[in-house]
Each structure stands twice: as C-alpha cells, then as structure tokens.
Length: 98
Image (cartoon, rainbow, N blue to C red; front, side, top):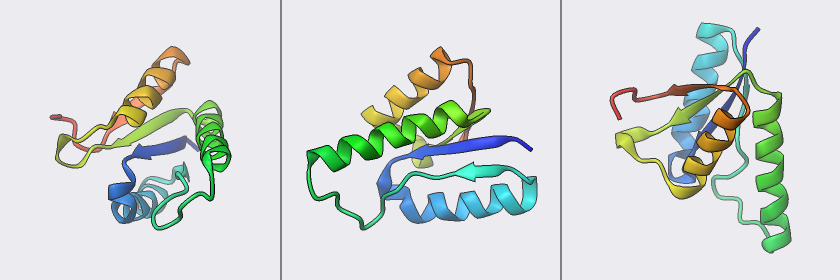
C-alpha cells in the first residue's frame, strides 16, 4: 500500500479532504493529510510543531501529492516539494499541467 502525504494551501482545505477520500477509496492509498482548515494555532510554537509534524508525515510517505488547484503552489508547499525531492519521494501533482 502506497503511503501519500497531501500538500497544499489551506485555502484548498475542503478539496484536500475530498482528494484524500478519493485516493484512499479509489486507489487504495494510505493518505496523510495536513491539519488546518478553520483551526488557528494559539501561538508560533504550535504553528512550528504543526509544520514539523507535516514534514515527519513526508518522511513516512512514499510520495507527496500536491494539491495545486489552478496551478497555485505557495511558499510553504514549494519548500515541502523541495524537501520531498531531497529525500527521494515521488511527487504527484493534482493538476499535472501546472
């Protein structure tokens, strides 16, 4: 079973949840998703811990799945892509033409 971490802007939070469901039910992947949506971390320390946890999810994964709706890839997702490349992870784009 392929383990995949979803990476994308929290502006796409609902799409990320839908994509996670599709990848699990249609493709049989084990999907790790970022924490976010309407959750606001109480301070910078909590935000840092969320980011560290997300990078550990990438470490555990075979691939990262980039939710790049409309071609949008923000700074943090760009860093996650670079991290995944440096660690030999497969990179899958939701919209491959972007």
